[in-house]
Length: 279
Length: 234
Image (tube, rainbow over all chains, first blue to last red; front, side, top):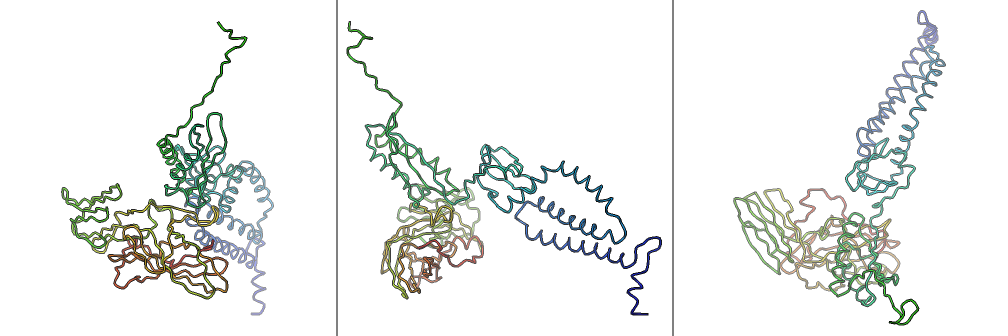
């Protein structure tokens, strides 16, 4: 009698239905396991991504994962209590198609956000250029990225746009190079000018010692000798260095009597010609 | 000039003038150095001013905590240890101490700072840069300009090593001073493939030197990293 108990219990029918007690217990077990699994994964996810993405996005992501687990559990469990899923799935399929069309962009942005989160081409605080937008990354969210332009304008860019655009990250490397083009008159001493420029660059603390700055005559221009100056600076302060050094270089070369030439033309008038006959 | 002062006070040495005067119930801290003036109002009455050398990685702004000291190329035979003395740039820190609380109120230097890149732009790191001669005995230096860095180079490998620079982490620096010298004692362990590990020893170079109050101490951040691994060559 006792050894036949499991088969007896499993054959007990709940009155008015074709569901046995055994099937009902399985249904409850699957639902409970789904709840527990959802809780465990949510907690693990919260712990792992805390501090990496904004709190709102983190909670949204956790909810999506949690309810996905519950729904999967429900879909697995429902057939045990004789609920026909074909009708639900058919209706769900149609709703899914509608939502799919309506939420295509939403989903693309979501996936792009995840890819950006994994690939990390940009970080909060980076100076970046995305398409025509130049500025500092203020926030990276699940669906969009917020950039504050250098004029202080709030710009929201969908993650799909970020994902499919050329991204220029100006501070991804610790140092970056910038250059000036300085023109001096032909009558000025180019060697002296370059020596003065080297002195100014070397005296600036953030014009890096290595890689060494380059100062050289690049070309003989229409109005003067063209000197190019290439300087490496820490990415975090390069703009300050760039704006400070040019003025200092100008003052230093002018102090040596070297001048920046104005555009000029030398016009020669022949003494005798057919257009200007001698009087 | 280095030491602890109860205010008001006024001191002047080697072109550096530091004074704290009473003004309308507050105290005015004023420092003049190299044509530059820095002023701070101090409210607490029973405080103390500490003036001493600090980690040379703060000026003109904190873009890195690393200091690279460059010197002439030194060839070191395998399985050997050599002690050399170098110099490092001095930065002077001024702290206000109230009971157990200490706060940095000024950092200045008579040196001109320079930065460099250790490694490549993609994989390297920004370092504060200083060039030094190699000395075999403790060099005489201006205690407001240059400190003495004792560096023990340990080549435990089986190959000859060419060393021309050492990179140190400012978080691990241990400074000591007396009336004639500011010092740090360090070690550089030459490892394989042109990597090395640098570390500081918390001991004075000369017996009787006073321990500096360092900036990381005022920040009350526990320093876990005691050494720096030079992975990009020496």
